[in-house]
Image (cartoon, rainbow, N blue to C red; front, top):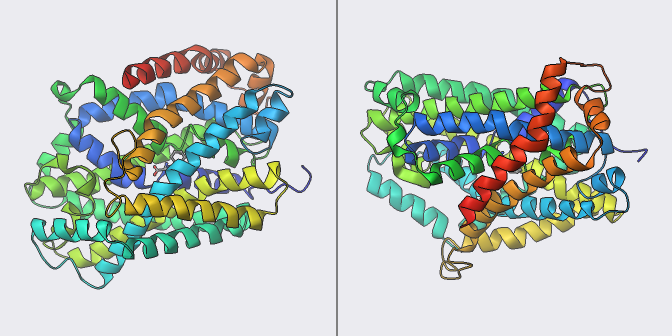
Amino acid sequence: MANRESFGSGFGILVAMAGSAVGLGNLWRFPYLVGTNGGAAFIIIYLAFVLLLALPIMYSEFIVGRRSQANVFGAFKVLAPGTKWCNIGFIYVLGSLAIISFYCVVGGWTINYFWKAITFKFAVADTAALGNMFSQTVTANYEPLGFMLIFLVATALIVMAGVKDGIERYTKLMMPVLFLIVVLVAVRAVTLPGAGAGLEFLFKPDFSKVTANTFLDALGQAFFSLSIGCGTVMTYSSYVSKKENVVGLSVETAMADTIFAIIAGLAIMPAVFSFGISPSEGPGLVFVTLPYIFAQIPMGSFLAILFFFMLFIAAITSSISMLEVIVAYLNEEFKMGRKLAIILSFAVVVVLGTMCSLSQGVMADFKIFGNNIFDFFDKLSANILLPVGGFLAVIFVGWKMKRADVEDELTSGGVHPFTRAFRNYVYFSIKYLAPIVVAIILIRGLI
Ligand code: TRP
């Protein structure tokens, strides 16, 4: 495709990839999973999964995307013409759609809470009142829809501006801000009196809390947090030139994401312990526990503004990456202009997002397999679509592509050669290690 877009610089690619990876997954999901799964023990399992399973999948998505220079459906048509492999693309488009549909709802909450922080609504130092505030915020009919729409319009506008002038430009602008804010909040948190218990919880493993479910949670979180398994990395890497280092960029993205998750843990857990709150608060941790803490610490109302602004930035640099998967697919496979593709996918997401939002309130009794729509999309994507999508990516690269082609991509045509031993390990992990372990955890989790 002659007039395809591409990223402007290597740094721009890294920031866009890190922007996709760092999101609500790090700041909202990771801390409460750590909280409910026994602290450091969960972190250790999570890190092992990132290294051993997530990285090979990330390389694989990268290889397919960059080699084909096409969207998630077209990529397989380029690399395996005349076969059925391209149907993997449907899973990726579906996965991206499922995720963005509930993600935009939470994205709306972040804007809502940012607004509450600016107007000093957290002055009540009472967890019950703040709990009520949260449940009223999410169960209302119209207000969350309004904020969700703002979030989606912002997402669509950035994607509309294009890969280089939209996605790359805005993530480059926002990610450093995000990093500064999270560090600032973390420094404030670890210097609170009594923060030590929180640090101990984060860094001293208690393996007695580890159950079979911990492994599935850790796997789902690794996929979700690194944005793998539904074609995000594949789509972004299709805009990456042949000379960039696939392995280097993947490892750097994974490192950036992990560092953000740990710092987010540092920003949240010490404060939680310092105020004697249970770390296993669950999804409300960020929206209930933190405002309670902000209401009581020096500079708290200022930190609250920063924190919810940060949450919004983290969310939007991720949502643009999900939208781009769908837009690139419609744009290239149906020869529809980018603008039309964006409007169409925006409309579909608004409908699905509205259902997710209402499922917190008036539509709570509408259940799919025992879950409301929001939880259904969340579980369907993290526990099924992402692992299956990741599994198919490594299977395709390990078993369908020629090893010489895979190595050509891994080394970027010999520009980044690495050692023989390292290449052997990477190939082994793509061909055997990742698919086998992911399949085992997935099957165990499903039954
Ligand atoms: N990684 C993002 C987060 O941690 C969410 C995300 C963006 C995502 N793109 C994705 C998750 C693709 C899975 C697949 O919040």
